[in-house]
Amino acid sequence: MMKLIYSRLLAFICFITSIGILVSCEKDEPATNAGKVQLLSFGPTGAKHGDTLRFIGTSLTSVTAIHFAGTNAIVEQKDFKKVSSDLILVIVPETAEKGYVTLKTAAGDIVSKTQLNLGVTSSVTTMTAQARPGENITITGKFLNWVNRITFANDKVVETFVSKSQNQIVVTVPADAQTGPLIISYGGTDSTNIQTADTLKITLPVATGLSPDPVKHAENLTITGTDLDLAKQVIFTGVSAPVTTFVSQSATQLVVKVPGNAQKGKITLVAASGVKTLSSTELNLAMPSITSLSPSPVDPGAQLTITGTNLDLVTGISFVGVTNAVTTFVSKTPTQIVVTVPSSGVLKGKLTFSIMNSTLTVQSPTELVISGGLPPLADFAFPIYTDGANAPFQDWSYTVEHNFNSTANVRQGTKSIKAVYGGNTYQALNFHAAPDNSGPNTSAYTKIEFSVFGEAGTGGKKLNVIINGNYGSPAAQVTILEGEWATFSISLSSLGSPAQLNEFILQSAGWTGTIHIDHVGLR
Image (tube, rainbow, N blue to C red; front, side, top):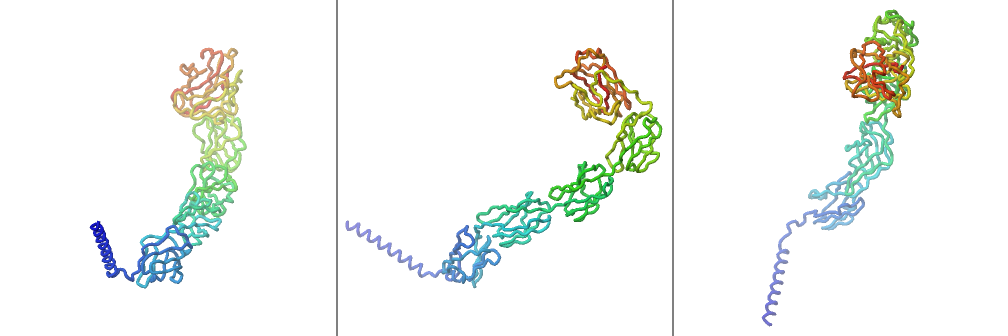
């Protein structure tokens, strides 16, 4: 027992002795950083402006000031909330920004190894209400020096500013910005975005006047208005491609050449943003207007007098049945044209006039009747098409193009069918009895009749005549004549003597071309 007590006492004495040795060594060894200012840590992270910030280190009483990132973000020693050798307490100044902190001492600056970040909430008080692209706008508010990005409408991001301070930002409006609120993005420990309550209105080009009125194709059109220097494109009615090259351009006047295919209508101005504005008035184009054709009937090869207005703009006259337009005139003035009628192939129909510097055409309001032309056709006992589809037949056609109200080439009446076949064997004009697929009883009729005119390249081409959906076995074929009307009469007996005519089809036989069909019916 005594032996155990003695052993424990000896161990305790050795422990006390060892402590004495350690304390004496620490006390005797001189401190290597004695009197040197050291910054060991600072915080807290996420502190806000006006909060107390704690700096921990050594010899901190030698710190004469603390410089924060930001303009005039300096706290002098006299304004420290507390200072001791190992601790400084300061209030974070309102102008402090994210960045390194510098402790100023007589021996030199001590810069923090990490950046100070703060919790801020930026806000907007006012902003410019309206501006032109490229102009500067001013935004006022709080903690705007923390803003790192402004997004304009149409997702136009700006990260470079004209100037930025705690309470104000000046920024340039992007060239392609659109009207809308702004998205303000700011940093800090709680970085986020805010949207302005107000809308920034972006100035757009506005056209208030067009001259001359009317204007001719290929002439210069003067557009007057406001902010026209912002227009990047001009769009004319009827023209798919915008005009981007101007004769001249200023804020109040834009001069542009009128495209050849421009039509009457409003002018559209397009800004760099793609936003469009319409002119307040319509563009009127100087176009030929035909008032009379004399004489009518007229003999082929004779002279025809055409009266009207703006006839000096006419460059060519197309006669029905004649492939090439007449471009040489006996005489031409703004109110009268005298032209020689083609001596062969000319047919009754409206005249088509080509216009100088334009892709547009105009037609005469009345048909020119040709002396000695085709004789009139008798009325049908049951008409299928005469100036339009007659009930119960409807247009069920399937061609590249077909127009049941064409006036381009008429055999009789005022309208015919223009059909463009595209080379597919199964393309056809289809007269279909609808809605119940029930056509007329054929017991009172003996034949079906129709007239066809072939345009260039269709001479000798075949049309399959199909009735009642019998595509596999065409009932008959007819041959197209190029440049003239031909009337075909096909007996119902040769078509299989159908009890009813529910469908009548004129199908191409694998060719491409344009034909006109008129006066279709049962006799």
